[in-house]
Image 1 (cartoon, rainbow, N blue to C red):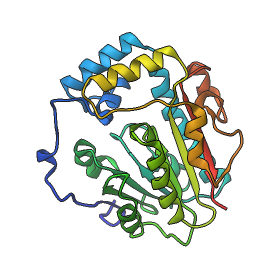
Image 2: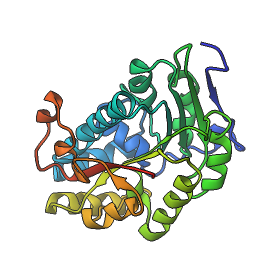
Image 3: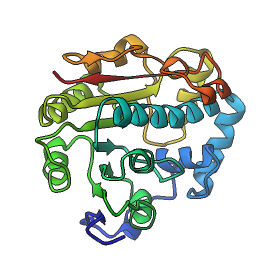
Image 4: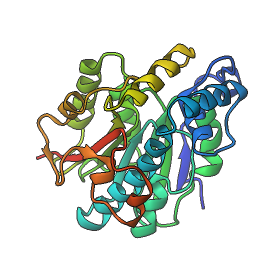
Amino acid sequence: MSEQQSSVTPPATPVSERIDTTRPHSARFWNYFVGGKDNYEVDREIGDQIKALFPGLVDVAVAGRQFLHRSVSHLVEERGIRQFLDIGTGLPTADNTHEVAQGIAPDARIVYVDNDPLVLAHARTLLTSTPEGVTDYIDADLYDPDAILAEAAKTLDFDLPVALMLLGILGHAGDFGRACEVVDRLMAGLPSGSHLVVYDGTRTSAGMIAAEKAYIESGAVPYYVREPDEIVTVFDGLRILEPGFVRLSEWRPDADSATVSADVDAFGGIGVKK
C-alpha cells in the first residue's frame, strides 16, 4: 500500500493534547461495548452500567454493524456505487466500510470523517486500502459540511455518485433540525444518483430510554434517541429505497440478522438523490 492509496489529513492540534480520559466518549464507549480494547476506564464504567441496565443495547451494536455490511454490499453490488463518504467513522473494527466495499469492488474509494482524537490516532495504521482503490481520513466535524466536501473532493470524484454514510451519528445532534440542514448541505454538494445511508438508535422501548438517560448523565457527549417518524425526515427530498426506513432487523435481512432481536431499538434506510 502506498501513501497515495491511503492517507490521513493531519490535525491542527496534536492528537495527544486532544484525548480527554476524564469522561466517556461515544467512539470509545461503543468500542468497549462491542468487545474492543481501544477505551479507558471511564468508558468501561459507563459501558458496564448500561449493559446491566439495558442488555438490549448489545443488539443495537451488533445490528448496526450488520446494517453497515448489508447496506454497503447492496450499494456496490446492486446500485453500482464506488465512492463512500463515511462521517462519524468511530474506532476501526472488523468489516469497516472500505473493507466491505473494496472486498466487492477493489477500485472503490472511501473517505472517512471523524473528529475524535483516538480515532485519528488509529486511522493511519488501521484504515488501509486495496492497490486499486483509495482510503482517506479527514479530521473534521459534521457541522462543517463545506470543509468536509472540500477535503473529500480531493479523493472522491463529485461528477460520479457518492454514498453519504451517517451510521449511529445523528443521535449526537441536540438540534435535529439543524442536523438535517447539515445533511441537506452535504447532499446538495453531491451529484444526482448519490445515496444517503442512515441508522440511529430509536426511542422505541423503556430500556433504550433508560440507557439514553444514564449515558447522558455520565458526562459524555449526549446521544439522543428519537422516534423513527422524526429521524426519517432526514430523507426529505430523497427517494427512500425498499424496504423503507425500518428496524435494522427488517432491512434486507440475511442469515446474520437472526442473531439480533427482531425488536431491536434502531432504524435505518437508504435514500437516493434524483
